[in-house]
Image (tube, rainbow, N blue to C red; front, side, top):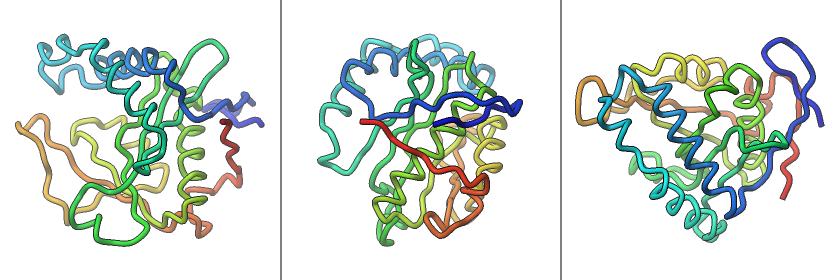
Amino acid sequence: MLTTDSHGRAVPRRDRHAREDDAEQIAGLQVAAWRTAYAGILPAAELHALDTTALTGFWRDRIGAGTADGAHVLVHDDGRQVAGFSSFGPARDEDLGQRPAVEELYAFYARPDCWGTGVGRSLMRSTLSVWEERGTRAAYLWVLERNTRGRDFYRKGGWRHDPTAAPSGSAPDALEIRYELTGIGAGGSERRDGDTARIQS
């Protein structure tokens, strides 16, 4: 199956469910993405202290648990490496957790050198595909208020800032705000390119 990058070029889509042996690459990807995206936003010491080994253990456990707790991890495998990943599952916010068919996007990252190549768009379509299969109707995520690149990506995908949710975070520079996506599976704007995702096992 083909999708297109930001320049309209056809590229193969290789989104699949994560395996335990992907954990180290996912952890390294997450550290690289944090250090690039959050430079000047989060304290340099905090970014420097990110522990790839600990994150590898976390992701190996998460993937190893499978979908028993309703959580999923998808990766975009470009044939050479894991270029991006998406982690999502049951809503943890009390107000939205009480609503039926709502899920939370826990983490969504691509390797910095893959930004703008279509990896993120492909993974988002695949995430939406899983949600549709599960009967999910709405989703939400938390994003750093100062992460303008991330906010722009979500906004273009149909996500909207939820002003009813109070910002969270331990410092003014690290405030997170909530975004919501509604109408999943109802032919909304998130499928405006008409593409249908196929997830590989």
